Length: 425
Image (tube, rainbow, N blue to C red):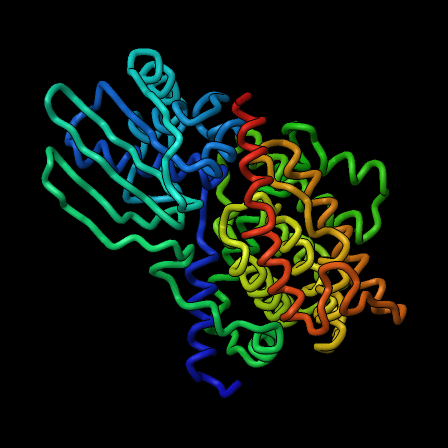
């Protein structure tokens, strides 16, 4: 890779697009954002609301607490929060700054307003529409493919925005098709830190803050604390427990923001927190940490590109494998070691299902990081899984292609069955 060539600039742009702040689980916050935008378009408080969402959105909103709502869950709560107190201009932080004295407005609005939900008839994995009405006035907003990609706005039959919709999860974003693990490794080695320092400093600050909050207080099943207490105070235990604690907090109502990866706060914490803890515990310099975070973040994005942002395939698997590569990089590992770490991890953990955002996501982060670090331990001891072992193919990029196929195509029916179970169909 030549410094400042197209791939270099695209890698920078991908990091800027992916590493953005979000408060709370990204699917309910996307609903709140869409609802706030629909309210603004209407120009008054609606008395009737219809949220139409694809199955994966419904799955990820059903069981997670919407922050700053007083513990409310579900699509109606997310929509009510966006309409009652949301700020559309803040997008995925639309309900991040709700004064305590205004939290009751959400429940009050929810009690007096008809908010209906429907399953979208769509082939898109991420498809969200919010229609609002006040008397004879009405407005509608549609978001597809990613959490802030607004493609349609209408008021009283007048179309204010109408962009073409494709089935590409990354529509409107920097093309990721050029990514390979070798390109990512080379980029991490040569990137000018001034190009990424601000992005990564924010990731370090936000994600460590919510991880510390998760260890400090009682959230959900307290997976982070359980890992720390049951496994002891080793460096590895700290790396895993802190990432899990961030998820404990985030899935269970904490209003602190996180820096996401591939549209997910849980993945954003998994690819970053273990590296930050590991670097601190081993007194590694900040430059090494920055480069490892670049590698970990982009490696997770690369894996998710083939799968899609939402799937029956748990994204923590990719993030945990990427984090293990980042820790290997912190240790000074070469490209071959990183490639085998990734393949080993994916051979072990691919197939973990996503059954929506909820408290158990923290446990899945633990399993994904365990698998990733096992993959690293294996290659350090001269062991590896080889092409032909299950879904493993010769060459790390070929294995990643197989995992993408598994997550996007192979688990499509699994996704349908999970949704049916969750809505008791």
